[in-house]
Image (cartoon, rainbow, N blue to C red):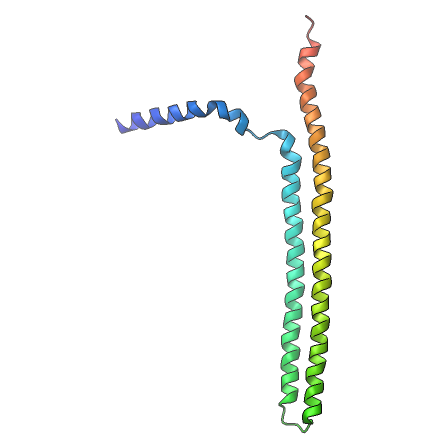
Amino acid sequence: MAGKATDRTQGLFAEALKPLQSAMLFNPVFRPQVEQFWDVQEKLLDEAEEFTRHWFQRRHEAARTALDAARTAVSGDLIGPTGAIEAFSEWQRHSAERIAEDGREWLGMMSRCASYASETEAEAVEEAAGEAVKITRKAVKPAESEPV
């Protein structure tokens, strides 16, 4: 008995959704935008991956060179305060260079990402318009070709 009620409920539900089916079908006109969206996502992820890989390489370098500077400063050798200051100053100078490189790479990445999005969006809109024209021509053609 429960099986019949469930089948009936599912049948009523399916019947109620029929008018929405055509609206829920994927419209081929949107295909270019969907493809463009996911293509851009891949490019953005690649850019972010490359940026973060370089960023981590610079952070590892910063940690290694900080350790080297600290070892130099506390080595027990008679380098004196001047030597320790020079070791830390050298590390600090290179750290500033790494931070500047972070900024350059960040700006480059953002510029490329914006370019991917804008260029491919324009192409997708143009392709979608072409697809809409093709669909419209197919829909209109049978009505025009049949003699009355």
